[in-house]
Image 1 (cartoon, rainbow, N blue to C red):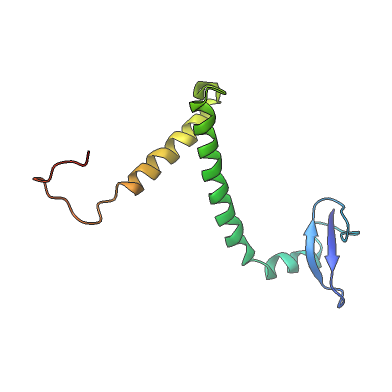
Image 2: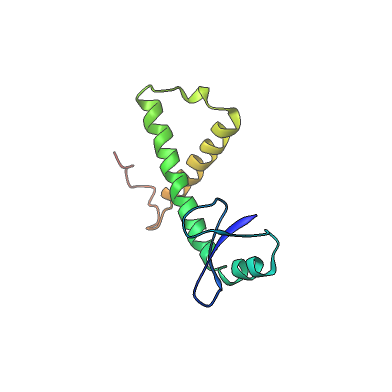
Length: 111
């Protein structure tokens, strides 16, 4: 069951998985009205994707800070988590190392 909020025309305008003020009506998760609401708000999914990407970066930075401060050791994380973090670091490093200006083999490396 989902809790919904409706406008004055009795159209669903918001959905919550928990009861909260303004979300007093319950509908089944497979109701036609609810499915229509989800379909009409598909554009919101891009906002969620961007928000998730931003949150992932925050979590990566948080793990780095906590391990640098000795709050916990990187090896204390489950191996699956370490593998995902390592993969993200490699991807980010490769993206940041793009050579947008070209390479001259005679140029000295940056200090």
